[in-house]
Image (cartoon, rainbow, N blue to C red; front, side):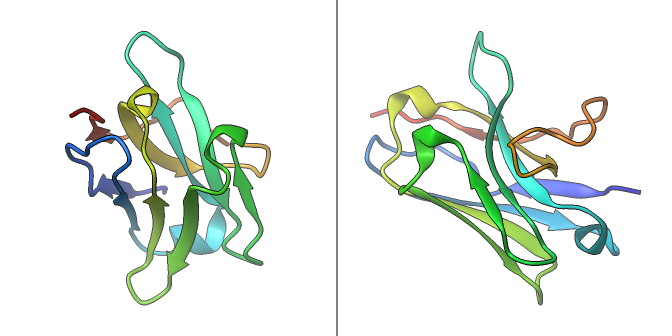
Length: 121
């Protein structure tokens, strides 16, 4: 069973940074690539980044390349998304989920609560 919990969201100013955590239960990180998606108000859910926990391969959406970094911490059993130089347009609810390296979710029928990231001054 996939069990993932998002945390770390919160108000951040434009140009600021935030680190999101996706904490897994059990052996989830051994079974799936794990990544981040976001849904801005009035928009469809968008793939942001994906991490291949087997070999470290990554995917980044073009809009976040050079600013966001996805990485795994084995001790924490978590995948993190470090977000730098955040922009107003990146205000969204951020979700983590199993993913492929083209930026799509493996399963689109089950999402967690996500964590809110309002980018505002």
